Amino acid sequence: MAGNSDPLTPRAKIAVTAGKAVAAASRAAGRGSGSVIGGRVALKLDPDLLHRLAGHLDVTLVSATNGKTTTTRLIAEALKAAGPVVSNALGANMPAGITSALAGGADARYGVIEVDEKYLVGVAQATEPKCIALLNLSRDQLDRAAETRMLAENWREGLAGSKAVVVANADDPLVVWAASSSPNVIWVAAGQMWKDDAWSCPSCGGVMQRPGDDWFCGECGFRRPTPSWALSGDHVLDPHGSAWPIHLQLPGRANKANAASSAAVAAVFGVPPQVALERMYQVQAVAGRYDVVQFQGRDLRLLLAKNPAGWLETFSLIDPPPAPVILSVNARGADGTDTSWLWDVDYTRLSGHPICVVGDRKLDLAVRLEVANQQFQVCEDLDQAVQLCPPGRIEVIANYTAFQDLRRRVGN
Image 1 (cartoon, rainbow, N blue to C red):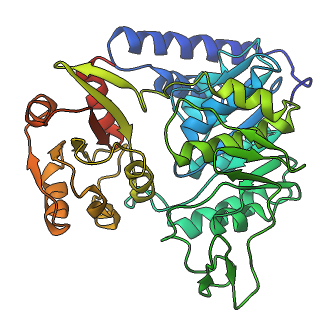
Image 2: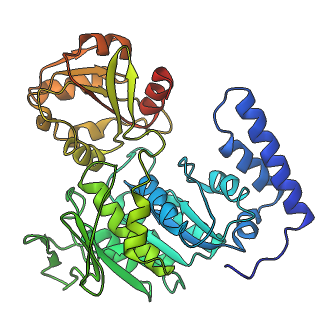
Image 3: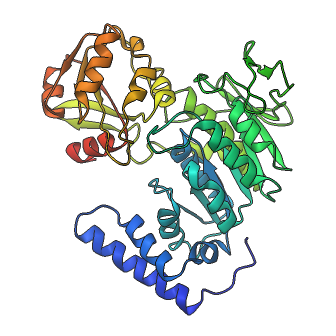
C-alpha cells in the first residue's frame, strides 16, 4: 500500500539484482524477455519479494479470461495522468513475471498488474491492491485451467472481505457471483457477447433467464446488479449519468468495453473519465495485438484469439468478406494441449472469406472448418498462406504461441 513501504531488505536487494542478471542473460541468449525466469530466481531467493516490491505502490489488479492485457494497458495509460506507473505490459501475468515487472518500479506511484485467473487470490494477498478489475470468465485451456464455476468460487472465497475496491462486469453472472463477496463493488455494464458459460446459476445451479441484456435466476433470485458505469454505444456513462466519448485506435466492441471498465478504475484513483479516455487514445497496439505489418508486400493485421469467447469477439471486428483470413492454431504448453475447444467456436461466421490454415494443429482446425462447411486451404507456413491469399488486407487470427510464432516471422 502506498506510503507504507519499508526499504528493501538486503536479501530483497540481492534477489532483485540476481533476477535482473538472469533475465539479461536470457535475453542475450535469445530466449525471450527473461521476465519469467528472472522472477523465479528472485522469488527463490526471497519468497516475500512480491509483497515487498508492492509496498510503496497503489496497486490495481486486472483479471479475466479475455481482455486483461489490453485493459491493463488502458488503465496504465489513464493513471499516468496522476503519477508514474509500473506495469507488466507484456503480459507475463503469473507471480514470477509480476515480480520481474515490479522490480523495475522503484520510482512508481501506481502498479497496474495483469494477473492470470488462477493466481489472482494469491497475488492479491501479496500486493494488497487498492483496486481489482474483474472483466469476464469463460472456458479456456481445458486441460489445465479450472472449470469456470470453480474459478469463480476461488475468486469469491479469496476476495471475501477484501479492502480493495472491486470493479466488476455486471453482465457476467460468474463475475458478479465472484465479486459479490466483496464489501465494496463498483458494477460496470460492459456487456457479454459469449454466454455459453453462464446459462446455469453459479449460486444454486438453476437455469438462468436472460431476457435482453438482463439476467436472473428464477429459482434463487440471484440477478444482475444495477450498474453505476455503463458502455453505451461509443460512450461511457458515469455514475452521474454523463456520457463521455470513447476514441480508441483499438478496434471492436470488446475494446470499448475494456475502456469503460478502465475509466471506472481510473476514477477510483481520482482521474476523471474525460482525462482517462483521452489518454487511452494513445494505445495503438498491445503486445503486437492489432498491429498492421508489412510482409511479402502485403498488409497483415495480427489478431490474438485464445478461446471460444475470444474468437467470437475477433470475428466481429475483422474486415467483411471477401477479406482474406489466415488462421493459425498451436497446442503447446502455454496454449493448452487440448484442442476440443475448436468445436465451441462458430466458424460459420467466416462464410465468404477466403481462408488459409497454418500452425501446429492446422489439421485439427481443418476438420472443424470442413464440418462448418467453410472453404479453406491448408498451408505449410505463413509464407505460403500469404502467397495464396487474394488481394486485400489479410486478417491473421492466431492463438497464443501461434501468435508469437507469427510475430517473429514478420519481424514484429
